[in-house]
Image (cartoon, rainbow, N blue to C red):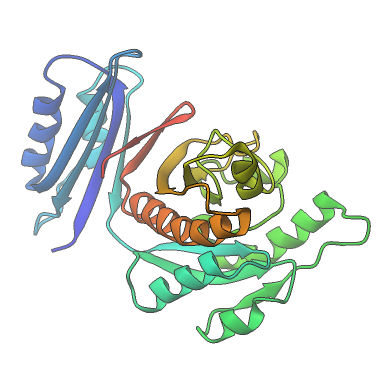
Length: 281
């Protein structure tokens, strides 16, 4: 039998878990994994329950039945465990894109890569090896961002992708573009945020003499590199590492960090609260 995931966010009260699991029992569902968290500062309760679907579907909407048992303003959702569809955005760097295409080809991640989009053709040959559609969407003369974004939207529209993954896509997306993809665009940033925001983070790290470098995967919002953080990975370095040494080591960290973030998101293990994430890993 297929599994589904029940997600809950509401004001904290006594007896919430009992009420929620009671509805799942009434539906004939069997809980196979469960996680809860209470944010003490805001008094908010979060829950992720993965369950096996009953042989006979219940005669009621499970998400609505759960919501009826919770405080006013509660949010609930039921997400069947399935492959999530996405489009990958890239520029010229191949390491993250190549890693994701390989993981897609070997079914290591629960996603379907519908297409790859880039403003350059540098990675077209790589993408073609995996049989994935490649769309070259060049930037119009004058670096007109809004015109370019309209071309991007036209290219990805036929794929109806649930998520956009910025696999080292080195352009800033406008607020207007982001509005249609709230918490659905995932970026890998080549530093341990909030340190070294923006361009050339490894050069910044080298000049600062850091002893740890890292990578951060996050949802994208209107504030540059400030979206809700999904995962972070680090690696120790020392005074013998130059900026290029750090960049080379960082590329491996970036691949791991992004892949881990995508697994969490695609398995519905992430809930967003303001600019923070609750991650049931």
